[in-house]
Length: 129
Image 1 (cartoon, rainbow, N blue to C red):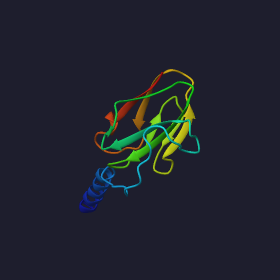
Image 2: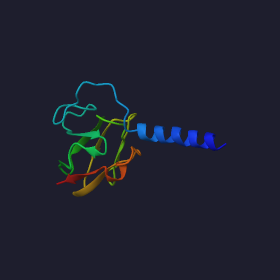
Image 3: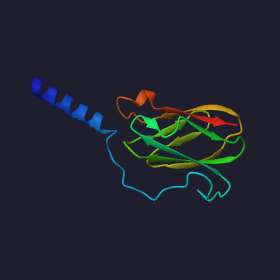
Image 4: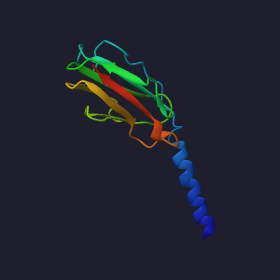
């Protein structure tokens, strides 16, 4: 019985640690600024590139009252994104979303998919001017 419990614990640990190590197939690059996405040529583009336990930028800045298209690219590991107060939630099934943020301020960008040991510190900021 002890061996079975230890074996199951080891399998669970391996599964948990491998969650951030999964690789995604390379894709054509999405526009980082300007251009059309989701049929909206005027939308600001914000590309959130996620690697193990960090985003590619500490802060992203957009203009208040304008359409913003957020996109998620998982470069390393499997991640999902939530921007509290901006009605943005991205994951592998929903990689882009266009919203209009009418309130200036600073919004937290967090990884919303437990991705391993550094998950709790995987944060960034969205600044709406």
